[in-house]
Image (cartoon, rainbow, N blue to C red; front, side, top):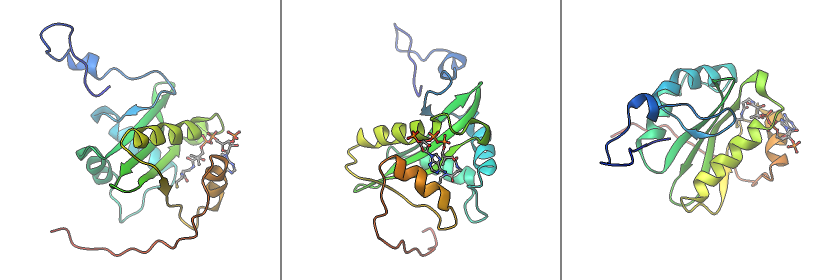
Length: 162
Ligand SMILES: CC(C)(COP(=O)(O)OP(=O)(O)OC[C@H]1O[C@@H](n2cnc3c(N)ncnc32)[C@H](O)[C@@H]1OP(=O)(O)O)[C@@H](O)C(=O)NCCC(=O)NCCS
């Protein structure tokens, strides 16, 4: 989905073809046209926080080769996402989200599987994620997918960008 080329001459096809949406339920890398719907989805799923600008998070994930946002549609609208990033040691998942009306149909599992495949293709051997302690239900979802509590505390500190 990120680049589509003509059969001869190597010139990109018209943008309207390159940006054609994938079939429902198929995870592909986010495009510019998806950004608003992705932010709306994250807000509807309660994943946004005042200290994380979702537009910046999306832009930064798209900026390098080691991270991305994957999206899938249901009835033509963005209905599921997963952000994936490889930090050179571990693969990480963020923003795993399924629209409330599309839950319970396997899209959440498919989002994690797609992000895992993206990370494995970039050398990941272990995939990790953080769940807010207030988000207890979601731990059971990840356990169904084979994830287990790693018995590690996550420590963090805000720093000024240089
Ligand atoms: C968590 C979330 C992504 C699950 O999406 P979903 O599409 O409903 O999940 P699926 O239908 O793919 O379910 C996959 C499996 O997990 C199970 N599961 C899903 N939610 C569950 C829950 N809250 N508790 C226990 N099991 C759960 C399903 O029964 C299913 O099991 P099976 O495949 O063995 O039958 C969705 O509820 C969501 O977007 N939540 C809000 C956002 C969020 O908190 N994301 C996580 C951030 S860390």
